[in-house]
Image: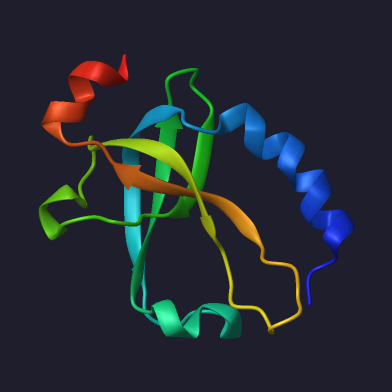
Length: 108
C-alpha cells in the first residue's frame, strides 16, 4: 500500500509538469516489469525532453505503433499508476500521451 502522505507530497511536483509538451528522445519496451506493473506488460517507456529542456521518463499510453518513435510530440497526462486493494488510496502519476497532427497546432 502507498502512503497517502507520499501521494500528497508528490502532487506538488505533478502540478508543475502537468499538461506539458515535449518530444520523445529515446524509448524502450518493458517485457519483464516489476510486480505492480505485470498486467500492463509489455509496455513502452519513453525519455522525453519537455519544451523547457527538462527531461522526464515515463510510460507512453493511448498510442498507435507508428507514434512510438523519436521526435514524436507528447503531452504529460495524469493516470492511475498501479492497482490497489478496494480500500486503498488510488495512486496517480504522470504518463505521456502522443499528440496527433491535429492537436499539435493547438499545443503551442
